[in-house]
Length: 305
Image (tube, rainbow, N blue to C red; front, side, top):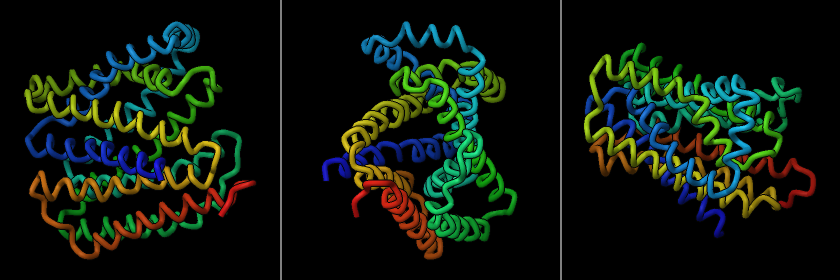
């Protein structure tokens, strides 16, 4: 139960991203600043963490030897992912972004051929249910807004759902266990730095400097999601690593991001309650994610029921 509790707690902190991105959008803040500030703020604490772990020298040597690899996949895994996520927050409430973002659980396994592996179709039975839930949510949302607005929410999130697992898996494949996860995160932040500087320049050109409120909220996103949630999730998955059933259950807890985001918007942003079809869609997505995760665990050799 401890690992499940840690997974749910990490999900609570991860949901801060969707809440505050929407809050900054409603205040008129540029999505370019919302995206770039989070990763620029992450650099100092990550430098300290990696330096204390003794991996800073090894990380810099790998970046020196493979600069294009870090820039390319850092930009894909972090740059495209988070820019698209912040852009979508301009057109849809946080609960809609959080629920649609769950498509990444499907997109990740579908990238297997890019790594010389076959797609695990047997473990994707529940993917159709997840897609059905997302479709119900989107159809309901499209009835309340223009088709263009719905498209501007869905397409960026679809790009983000592909870019995040692609960039991260490519870097994991490149490193082959040579560095710990925090070193990889720092390296990808550094690799995506040109993207964040360009976005910051675009934000300044369009709206000037970010407001103090946007700076503070971006700092909160960095602390809550970038540091606390990541640490809690890594801790929970490490504790459950020897038991695939427990590990799958920990991963499934991330579906509660949708619930926490919805509750947060109702309490903090005075958002309207989603319609009954949207709530049904959210329930289907969460249930599908849990069952898919459990199906994966049961398909692994030695996994217990």
